[in-house]
Length: 270
Image 1 (spheres, rainbow, N blue to C red):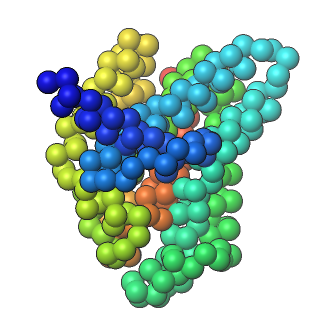
Image 2: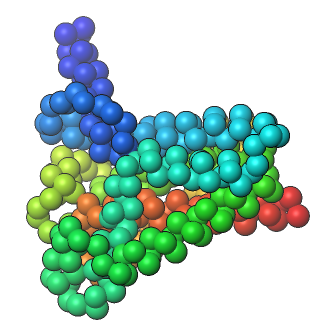
């Protein structure tokens, strides 16, 4: 029994390492083995990576907002930049590529070719400016309005966004049979959904213990809506998903969830 347990544990750790390398800019130089099992475990680790990123930002938000000498604007901007730096801007690149492709108004094949182009066009730049400007505004207003609860948003929003990424990878068809999304999707199936459900259950229990169950449910409902709409959009416009669409979903969902959190807390505190 002991000999059989070790490989599974190591595969799970290797998968977590792969997920950290893919989803974050943490300086992890170890070359983890890429196999069918470690690839599967990497997708199962996406929500855990979201909790890690959110936890790092949430802890900082909690302590920085207790320091009256630091203006809320400065704290908001620091945490906004921190969340981008921690992902290395990788997901933002996917957002820009999808924007350039969509606004080209070409057919699906042309759009897929544009998404493979390493250059960024004007539509990509404009769209990411709008995306990040709105996100920063919602973060700042939420921190100013509900400083005692905002750490929960910093914790939960990356978590839901990474669940969305994994769910899209598991359930949506591929736009092309090449690239990163294709390589990972070969090793994952819908049997991963119960694991994601367990993540949600545990996170929901934690939110209930923190007295924020309504906030958790609201973010879950909004995130689910963003997920379903995005999945339909990607299939219609690109014929399926690519690595870029995964990044676009993550970035778009984070901004929408910050909007939802701000809206809910503004009603609650108003």
